[in-house]
Length: 430
Ligand SMILES: [Zn+2]
Image 1 (cartoon, rainbow, N blue to C red):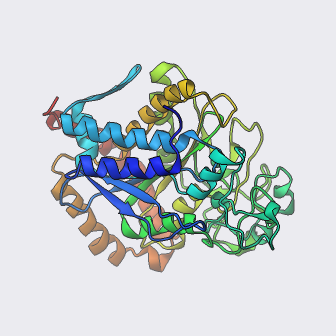
Image 2: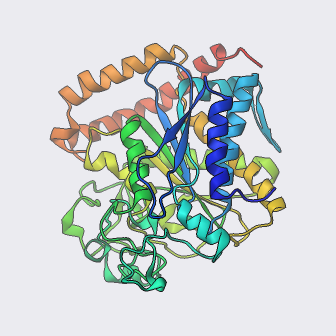
């Protein structure tokens, strides 16, 4: 056994869909890569009710070899455990059969393991340190200028030359308009098939509420935001406000990205829970932190056009969309893209334990799930968007602030009650 190649990843997904037809579905992504590859994802879940969804992607950066392997193993574990009525144990972190059942029956878990197969194929066969895709459109025929970094190509402050302070480029992490750069951001937001496919999944599953992009390395679990430090005091100071163009991306100055206190506590809470689940496996401590302060990098790491920031930003640019709490995992505390396969097998157990925890936290606690999700959907559409429309008042406006305050007061009271309710009646298969 070794790292999966690009053909094996696709056949693994097809194999899982064929082996577990009642609880999984192979999804064919519509946008072909430059080299003509068609990617697939796998949806895991049963039940008729429209349900919240979790999207897990990997493989954006070609040389970060273990990410797709982590995702394929995660999908296989979940499907096998559910179909045999078993729990899952990863070293010292364990989940009961009831917890697995809760994930599979109350969520759509969408796993898209390898968003950049052209890059992976090139890394595994020709030049191992390759990072980007293999699109030559901006190369002008120069082999040294092939490829776009998919994780700088999403539509979040993509035009970094306008939206960020010039000094934010100093660390070499933000993005680049130079096709020869490893962080070349492409010719336009979503110019690349790899990112178009991720966006397409959001269109297909509008109830995606959690997102993880699995990268390496460093041992970090990163939550919003990635463009600047966070602040919860001034809603108007945010990425949608052009008055702050040219001022983003530096710590300790006037600009910091707005995230309300309730969202921040939810965002960091889920990251901390994932970190604890990973630590339970064999003691690997993954730092949970805001992505701007990437701990394993050691200094601020501003980014533009990244998948996690775009995912979280969608609601703030269009409040009819679901709010998505979005994360990046940097697996492997040893700073190498190419651990031995024996070491990688241990890392797979670490991160998969974290991903199960992540899904479990996203699964609705309420037991009468069919009623509950329909009621929430109705309340959201019939009441919230009609009476207090964030479309009208703005996602940073007065009603949104009232809702945030109400949520921050009610959430700590209601959540434990719902959790207890869920536990007492959520038993069953072992
Ligand atoms: Zn990466």
